[in-house]
Length: 404
Ligand code: C5P
Image (cartoon, rainbow, N blue to C red; front, side):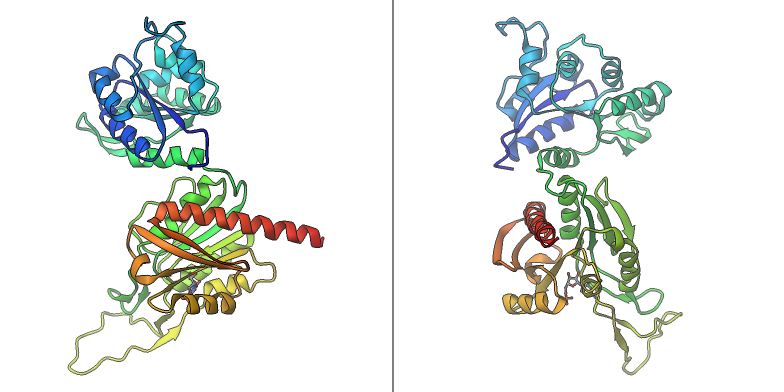
């Protein structure tokens, strides 16, 4: 991000109760290093004050097309030229109608019409308004015009009703903005990712699993999408929402994960095995709940297939990336694993840090040696890893071309 010169977001607020969430969004964007220029419609100022946005963004907030303090009276042109992205959040039904019709009767609608940068909108309205034929038509028009529609989500509404129309959360909007600025280093590539734990049934209510949360794999899926890839995410049981835009395949056991990967891998350019796949499963899962007995119970286990080894061993394998979580002697085990599984890139982390938490640190092992990704939130690590994978993948492709 730091080396991306285009980083000014014009944040437009229109009149809706979700405007209070736009204040949080402004804070998140600023914290992430963006310059944020807020522009509010008159109705938006009924819900939050310009002073709130000014304090959060550190810049005067514009609300008026006829602002006498702008020397050339061209605030709409100047503001839109300074922006790399316009994000209208919340976007009311009325404002979406204006955009779809090309109206320009206040500062925000005028600068949207005068823009020469991409436009994203985060609709927020009552569910009936969202479902109304006029709104459907307006959304279809905006999509056709190349406007990115973020959300809305379903849930409780300020009016007391429940349904589709809530503005998506500030954090999801931040992800969308980050994604927009991400270099498209995997443009058009098909990336298959496994994530999360597996669950090996012992009986109908018990099983063997591990503490993998899926956060690392899901963050990598998000980062790959942001880098322009087409992503398929095969996930064990986790409590995370799949990243919007990915094809998501949910599985439970290692055997199911293996089947799903075998089906999806034919089309993949890159395979990233992040899942913490159980190495063993019970030889036979009991059909009934196992009863308590006085003595010991012996559970016989058998090996699960190694999915990564299978993919790397295919005749024309995709570019394969493995993960290794070790609790000790990280480097030695990781190097051994890279050789044994025959993968060009292995990402090693300490199980104590990696499993379940929000942060991670990785050591990447490839033909050029080792590269450290210092401790950071998993989203940041994921973006760095995706850039590294894209560079190695590009090298591999051009080496293949040279060989003819
Ligand atoms: O051998 P180990 O389980 O430590 O290797 C970890 C790597 O192998 C991870 O990338 C993991 O997703 C993958 N793996 C797999 N199938 C297994 C076991 C591990 O794909 N059965």
